[in-house]
Length: 288
Image (cartoon, rainbow, N blue to C red; front, side, top):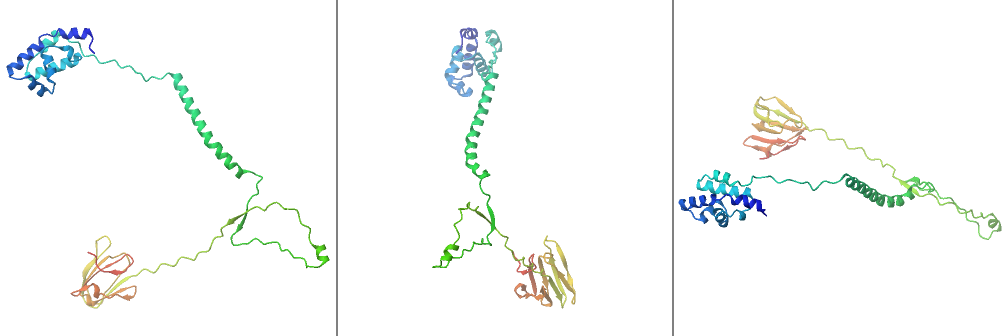
């Protein structure tokens, strides 16, 4: 709501609306055209021209709308606004309504602590009553016996039937003894067989009976050896040293894996053998 003082201050701005209406008509614009360009309701544009400030809200909004309208029509109304003495924009005074008195804060803290203590008591007391029997010193301590050992029973010799002496010698029943403490099973460690020894690593040996061109690559893709090997030479590689092998004149090369001859025919084509060596030293086909 706008008080009477604000309305009176706005009413003295007479002349701004007339100036804007004249400029609009000179530019050949309608109220609808101005409202569309300023994104302003037509009723607001009409109120500005008729200087009905009380319909437009607070002075800050009236001044802003007048300036926007003047910029659209390229009209200077700054002197008219100053003469109108439209009230300055005064920021609202912020009043804090969230202040809590010190006594109330103390009371709230004490109430929260009392609530925590109550919840702890409600949860802890039943647990204490349920577990107190386990800590009773009068309860017999359990005995420990191995699952492999069976407690020996006390042998009882039955008396001979029809013998008075046997009846006389019959033992008098002993008073009931205190129940024996329960036995707690104790798992005896079961011996386990020693782990089998890992198989020896399979070396890869090559013996050349004729000249052969080789291309041997390592695990990182780098070249281990790439050359022409003469007849009579040998090469030996440990598992993991090579991963890919190409042999030219493969019929003149004998490949052995851990002493056993490897048949290269599955990997050979046009007297060129290509194969891979796994990390264990096994010869496998080339994967593409």
